Image (cartoon, rainbow, N blue to C red; front, top):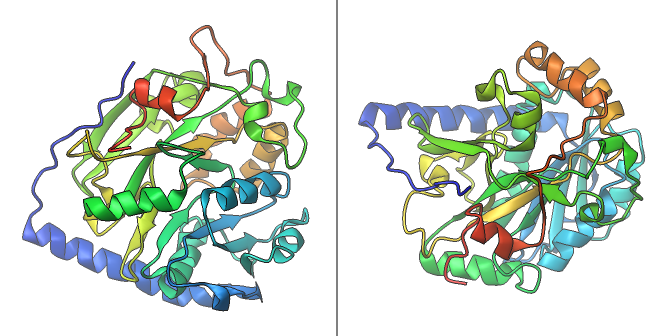
Length: 346
């Protein structure tokens, strides 16, 4: 099944534009106020060069994923990582501080109260991301794009510059093992794709949200397994992880939407030349059940966490996402053929 990403975007009224400009300013003001919650542990941003590609992330207890995460993005062409550690207690902070291309801030403030980390990252993006191509991702998200891994990320950003595009849109593709999640073995530093080899090739739906001119994509294994009775509550799967940043930009809802609205128009025109990517979502590694129980108790990951109690409870029961329709992941060409990515001019 192919996903139709091509939509017409309604014209926006002057009044709506005015309100969105004020909304963007409020987010920038929030970030300015929240900057005091960040304590620099090690600041190596003085080494950032003008043409460097930067990565921004907020993390908590991601030591198991970090070796491969950093290696994946280093090989791609990321020059510097700017990371907020949100009160980790598993060694994440010490590991990051030991990496020569990482600048690290720490905070014990509430994740939800910071717009799920976006206030902190907005401040760092404003201070250090202006004029750079920037990646903003979670620790369980591995970006791929047409030509990956042979094609450096800088080649892609040069293509986007030539097209006059300041963004790369991406589908978040949930990967899972064959069999119950907790029954596979994974070692720190291992490529998650070695154990998470499957995905849903179909069962996605999309619509344009006129409010922010953004695509709203849902479906996949989490919708199939956890949200059959309430599909509109299923996770949003479209993101804008790669942006040529300007200090006036803000993310609105994680990296699903941004302001100004031109940043959200990732799929609306020129499908033959406009590339898109995929974020390989490696959430379902062993330890998911324990982590789900912890996060349910913390109540920091949804604006109304009580609505997602059933989701968390299902995660604690060692779910099995594999079904007869599951497809083994083979690479970016496969995702292009399925309509889940676009190759652009590559």
